[in-house]
Image 1 (spheres, rainbow, N blue to C red):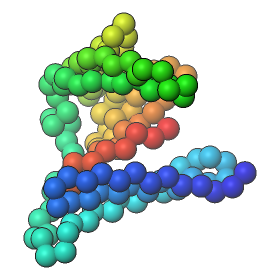
Image 2: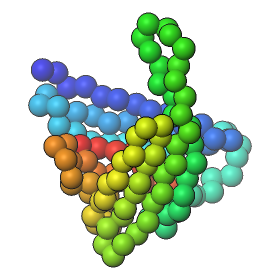
Image 3: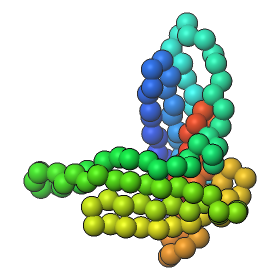
Image 4: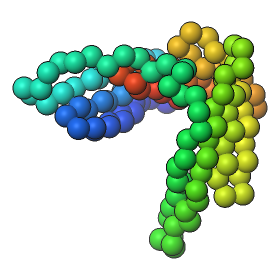
Length: 134
């Protein structure tokens, strides 16, 4: 096995946000780096970390399934409802025939989804960013 990494980049207006994740030889996360950039000459205004309160509510979206054989993609309307109940975050996602309910323990700036075979965590980061990790 070898060490490896990933990088995701997002652009909005005069800002670019990059997230780099590095993994060790055992496929465990070794580090994450959040890189916040702005166009030269633009003011360096800071954006606060993402909060639980910003996630709450009902979100509308669209999901698209792409196929490797180039057949016509399937597109579905989606609805995600996020609520806070005590020290847990609850979410219900519907997309086409899918109806998924999950909850996470709120631990400061971490959301710990501990149901199922593959527990995950979401870290709430600076500049309104988040990352989903094992």
